[in-house]
Image (cartoon, rainbow, N blue to C red; front, top):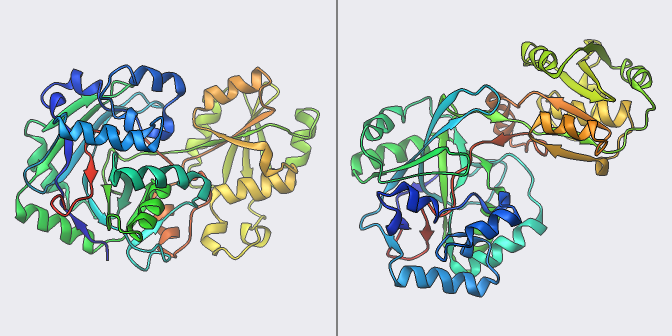
Length: 413
């Protein structure tokens, strides 16, 4: 089962106790930083972006070593497991949430359908791993934790509550003004309790598959045998799963009438007056095979007919449970079979309202909306050793880069 150990984190000494200074030193995850934002972050000579998105991998190594040498980055005196808390606003409801998890080092194991206790839930693509592999080769470090979830039945809650009443060790805000906080757990009894919880439960990689695979590859060439990870309990009330809607760039129908005609073979189709009404209908039918569509200024609510059995229509070697997921139904039945949409004509967007604007501006032909995947679905499918369909989930907000840093060293782990 999963092995998690404490470690001595590097952190920005200048930012300790000063959230505003720390804000200028940390960065969002490397893969969500735009070119414009990168230029803004680079204005501070010690911002972590100089390392995670370097001009060259050699320069990343030099910059990291310089910051350690001049003690811009200091290392903890004792190994710790850290609590990572985020106070954030749900962009859909406007409600304030707090989400808490642990940061520690997860032992790297082969992803053998979850047999080793670590379960992937999405595919990886080699072209996205090469860049991170070259960076970790040069730095032997990780600058933000991968995002994992586990079903711990809320057992860790008591430990978390004990620490979050204290002043955070590190605290800052991100570009969305969400509050990120770090607490240290040094007490061996508490660390042992956390480790026992993880030994009893599989870990599902929710975000960071490419970095995991990259680190595993690096470990086989003499690198660290662990990866820094954020562990969040399925049962944490602040854990929300978001979704990626589907943009269709080329839809081979002339108008709404023809679209409805193509869909009614497998779906019940209902016109609705607004996005708000469509959103309410989709939420009211959560857990069922329902979708939304926006095309030529019209909103449609779509529901798979009860007479259609996804297991009979969707091919491949997947389990019955996998074939009943909404994403395969959307892609294989609705888009491919009913509408003849090619995979290369589909892209993904998280903000439905921006997708609607793109339809109105004729940047795309249509937008298809989907309810978020549930934690129960992820848990059930990954327990079978299967990988979830592409772009099944979006976990938000993500941990910052540079808030806690792990560097491989026999003295650190």
